[in-house]
Image (cartoon, rainbow, N blue to C red):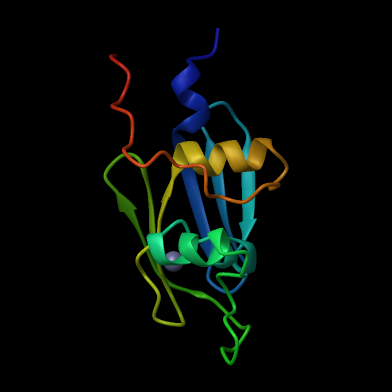
Length: 123
Ligand SMILES: [Zn+2]
């Protein structure tokens, strides 16, 4: 039986800066997120605020619609922190949220993260 935590635990992360972030999860599922979709779905508070007002978080008017990953780093065990080529770097992409988004066919955005993250389940 598969460990349920495996579905939200990455075993491999491949970043192609101007194309995608591809994550292999512990249950074997490979999820590829285009950089444009990821940037538009940035989970930080200010981008979330744009979307809650019915506007696009990215690209904002007057901004270039070209984007790339400048730098990506692990945030503890729970997510990926991305510095974007437009200077934006406040969003942290949690594995659980990314996996949920992928399982929903990238529908509905990446905004379902609870305000206060639930504690890790006991091991
Ligand atoms: Zn943001």
